[in-house]
Image (tube, rainbow, N blue to C red; front, side):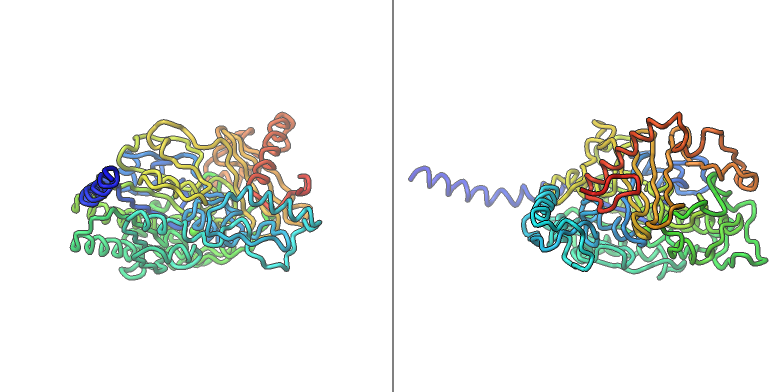
Length: 540
Ligand SMILES: [Ca+2]
């Protein structure tokens, strides 16, 4: 009896004390401001390239007070709309073949996953393959439209907003519409999405900023005590890169440029050509006719100096405007006394070429496009820079870790908290990249240390079977032999050294190539990549 009475008394006392504790704990729980731009390479930002003419004082300050990641990547895409898988990976923390929309190896008549219970995807796949093999049905049946068994059916319930809502956070999101993870986006308590690629108050980056400012005003008025998670997305610098006039003037660019015309807008203020500019990509990379390569406003198929410099000017005008809009939100948070208790993340869904390697879009795996900017500042985050070897799919487990929330079992990424605290330099040593939105198998990349291998193949096209091997320490721009052409050197002002080239067929690096080829195959297997290249063994 005594024990029971003591127990009941304890419950009573706890019920009085707990809400107070909960409130006190809430007051200390950190806020999160997750900033994500659309189609932005790290390479023009001064925190990655101090010589860049792009002015981003707000981001420079975040970078100076926080941690800059030199090796941050998106894992890739199986769609020309690279945004889509990238943003799925951000929201759920899963790898590229394990997210909604992925068309991986789906054995016929296999059990459909009931996602009510988070699962071990690897175990699941192994079992599925074993089961299919036992039945003698290992070949992919394209006509069979079964859900991907590697994607939990109710995965949306384990995505960013869902997880933070359950943990007692106030969640808000503004971003572009479309090419995203709709089921996950719907779960933000407040959602203000709209495509904003114009240059006025209502159609540009300022609109996204205003949604966040209005939300924060409301928060202040209602004296909301819950910590917040704000997903602050921009629709720029994705094309059409309609810049604001005063910024276009600053970067010597115009909005309505028609390539090939007489009007030459470039001047001394227009950014120079990137060092790895080419007038054309020298071989079929498996998706040369994708929208981004042929019909972007102001560029089309043109890669001449004037067109590319003007487009980079427009791009920089959009990037500086984003910086101004981030500044407005940070000012507001400071005014509200919330800034110091807020983790700020800055990243993008993937990079972009704009003339580098003769490409325009995001459908390739060169560093300018495979990499993303990744900067974090907040309580306990060490100042400095690290390599990190991170993917965007590490975002969700990191946010959970920083907020003291248990990460969902569906997550496959790594928490970056130990890196942010200066306890670790990197979270993995090998990076794998996919582009499979055009012909199959398409492109794959693998990076370990300074070495990177890229493979290309368009099934049925012998000439498309290309392998590239780069030492990124010696050849960070991934120069290939075409960068030696006199016309190109005249444009860029850069003459690559003899060793700054594709080393794949150089006998001196045969052993390194072999090692990288083996790593690529290992990564393809590890990630349930459904495709194989011409010189790889067939899938088991
Ligand atoms: Ca994008």
